[in-house]
Image (cartoon, rainbow, N blue to C red; front, side):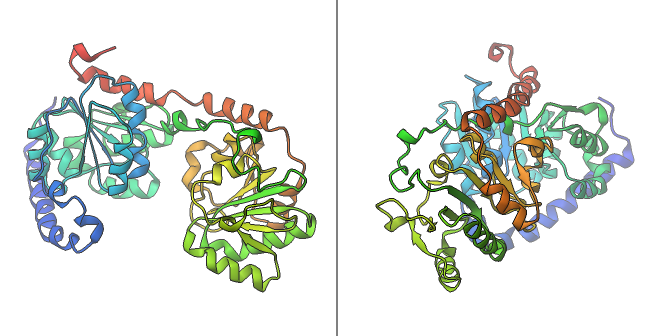
Length: 419
């Protein structure tokens, strides 16, 4: 390893001092947040972990969901997984791995991160997606602990901020960045070193489409959704797009008066507001919680029970997936595909850019025109088995990132832990 020049060393020391001072000032203020007070002992490094071989850090629930995939390829390896949120801890707790210990990530003071490393003594630190914590990187560099970034992704906006810190970050750079796509690999290469960035794919594909295919005979909702009327789902609808979705409901009922519409607000506190809107529009509706017999044709079933969106998709002819008619990033359009149902979405699906643009060519209909979405939802559906098979083929062709990421980790572990 090339030794940093004296100016670079001075710059790194100066940055480390200023960075620590900022945390010392901002740290106490953060604890006015109820979220930050959760797990405060661990955030301050008071409850240190036991030794481990691998330390994995994921920001919140989404990143922590990927840990289970990595653990499948690291069986028998002692792992410490940290996160920044209580939701992340909940997800980690559901992995059920006997070799996993979980903690809140300490505040990113180099001193606190150093203490964590001294207690955990990992062979390698693994950061998920875009977890570039300067304090942790500096503490790892000071102790010669290698760092990897897996499932690495970086937006152009994030790149601008990291480029500002490049003179410092390059002296505590990760040993390797396994990126989800070539564009992300190029951005990590610009911040650190192009030779340190490679493309391993997206672990989320390894998790996609793993929902069991549900037949009507096994569906607990079959008794309230009759087969004699078309059943359409409007799933995960966000508050900001409610006027557009109300217009979509009008057009669906005008096009097929007998259709039953399952309306799933993304947030339950919008149930009352939807009841008022539908009543004002003279659209018949009933809450799912009071529905014990088959829904009447022409009715909107306002879903006020958690956990039933998947089984409802399995009964639907087609589905609209919300969060996509306004700039909210979109909700998960892979869920209906897992049940063999073709979804429609609006133009804003940034949250699922990782799936790839090719999926919109045959499997997902995308439009900003409400009339066009309504016509597509009312079109005769293809066979569910054919839709699911096509979706599985699309996903399976892109799987393997978990194994590829584990192959980046293995060389840093003791030989006895290798497959």
